[in-house]
Length: 328
Image (tube, rainbow, N blue to C red; front, top):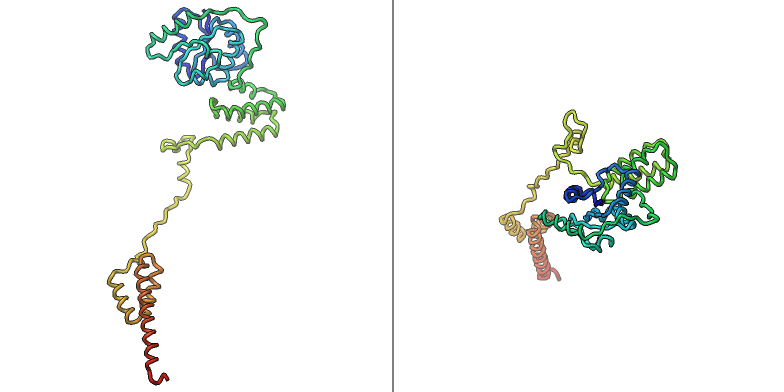
């Protein structure tokens, strides 16, 4: 039987094994080995889908998320091809698969035992009735997916480009920047090629510059290692090599001020005794100590003691004046 296989590029290893087993079972298998893109290439894929008797969809998350794979699947459905879903990766829920294949018993090709996987595949094939007839008229063929960058490259490299073609191409490239399955470096390369086009309009150039700036800002910072430092004679220069061109900024060393050491207990006692005799000693010492972090407690004690002694002496002097007989 003629079998067509739709698959995602990320599953090439699994699909190559599947195709090998199908061919060993005596089937004629066609799957896309060409990744060059282009309209003629896409037409060839659609032609192979029309000619097949059984349509195999290799189920994996990337395939279900792929615009190209879904367009191939919908075209096979419109043609009425007999579907055979084959699970090749356990990274997706089958509930998310399109109804065309989710309603069909799938073959589990993820089994660790290759023999059992092949047996499951044989059982699934035996339960399918091949379909060779085509509907009349034929359904409208799907357009080539814009996710194929080689197609975009052909448009970018076109010798002449109208204003509308430039606007459409820039919008297409902008949409691919939001596609997580597309390498943004490839899009940047195409934008840079388009920026050099001879027919490019000023407004288009401004849009391209804005997109290039956007991709530069959104790109994560590259981790630089010592091996990336520019070596003599190399063309690469990393940010680490800039240290040779910039003055080294030395960190200021702050030394501890030895003049602000905490007062020892002996000094505090001596100042206290002096305060009992002359209260202004405690007041002055207390005010000085309160302005330091280390001696605030001692300063508060001396200041309070000085104030109290000063008040006591003042009251004693006032009382003595009242007792003086000449006061009257």
